[in-house]
Amino acid sequence: GAILETRDRIPRRAPGAWKKAIKELEEWYARQDEQLQKTKANNRAAEEAFVNDIVESSPGTEWERVARLCDFNPKSSKQAKNVSRMRSVLISLKQAPLVH
Image 1 (cartoon, helix red, strand yellow):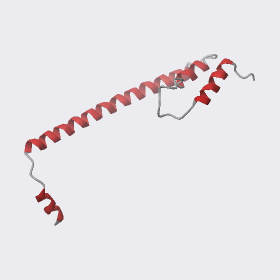
Image 2 (cartoon, helix red, strand yellow; image 1 turned 90 degrees about the vertical axis):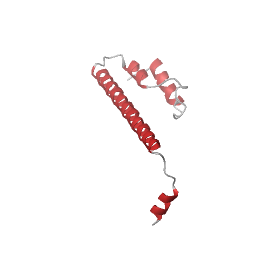
Image 3 (cartoon, rainbow, N blue to C red; image 1 turned 120 degrees about the vertical axis):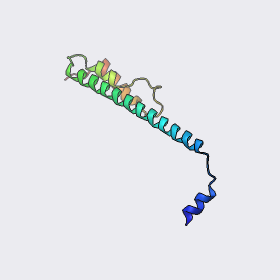
Image 4 (cartoon, helix red, strand yellow; image 1 turned 45 degrees about the horizontal axis):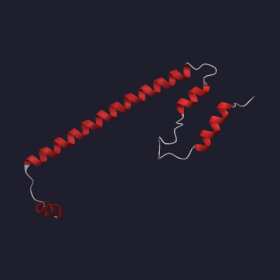
């Protein structure tokens, strides 16, 4: 019915156009797969570094670890929420730690 009528109205494309489209799609999938593999490798390396950092923690290096985990550059991410208050609290705590 309707599918056949629609198919008949679509002009037949040359086989070369289909081959080109298939080739472009295969290249796109290859790029996506390559990007996925790079992301996985980066995530594994970051996780390994994080685990090593936790295991090798020594007293007195807590603030260096906090500074590595926090992004203190307000211009780096425009999409992020406003964390200026948290940033100022962490900086003040680093300068004058709480006494237990």
